[in-house]
Image 1 (cartoon, rainbow, N blue to C red):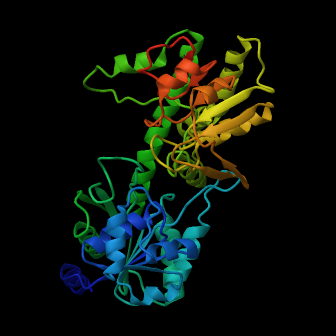
Image 2: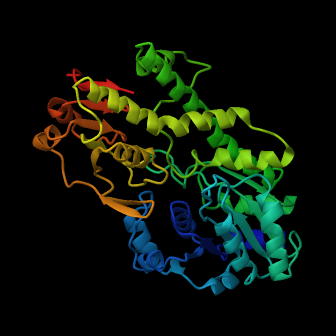
Image 3: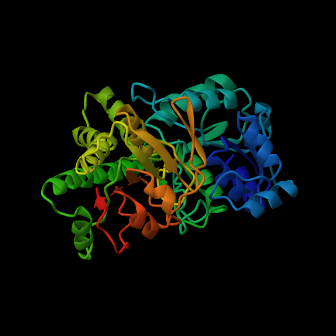
Length: 437
């Protein structure tokens, strides 16, 4: 099986299937197709499938013209029919792995996808899970479902591995194509074949590790490392405010050290599809071994509290002008979880708005990248524009995403007060009405 698949990969006679056409799946499908592999994308959302088949892009990291060209040439198509798995030689699973309302892993999307694949799995197929999950998922969950549902044996009839997604929306340097990959699989042959497949598609290095569990833990380490360090700097930001010290200046000073220090920055909380969620996966799994991840849990507590802390600070800013949050008009600038993208998954700005409204504040938001968003079943729309008169009509402006397209000089000049949680206004000259996190 190994030699046959290696030859098919080299000849580009492999048919690729990508399950899940979101922020991870669609860019991966595009890169597979660009590399010369016939690619079929699957999604349960008919709207996404229709858009792909029409050559219409909805993901920021995908080039519109490339998607359109690949679809027109027949190199890439999408479907909602699970029977397409029967035609695939390589299947990548790129579905969400959120937390449930108890902050525990929700692997229902993975389970449902694997069950679907098992019902159509054919011999000599490579199956790779890319969704971020807890260590052990591939061997303890995915493998038994595939074997039972297909009647095939892992390692003998099909290959199974884990290769964690590494997607950073809005990153101008690193995309799916040139970001290094990690591959762990069940059996040496599986590792070699799956890694070979990725090497034909990606420009970045492909690191082979000894097992899926190592690759799963590696991904958790990447994001837990960031979670903990952001928690540290958020806690220091709170302390520095009490001590009347500028945490942003402190970080800039620390960055002058050429070794042993990496800069992390405070903010209104954590957002995105990985950093706020992954540590909970590890903490949940650790309890199976009677182990408590105290450092991870402590940093999560700090980061989770930041939206409420930011609202407290806004209340203090208004108090100095003899105003209360209740009844105050507040404009939130930016609901994306990071600058210059249209992604608001787990964005702390949404919780900031929620907490402001709980105090009785009248809240609007402006985001040039997100015209509307849905949160806890409710939809909100951005105001259409900001100008001097609009900014002046609010009691407080809170910057919660550092979009570079915003005219911060104009905001600072006309706002009654500004609370900048991202140091987005660092180059503004008149700082008399700006308070930093």
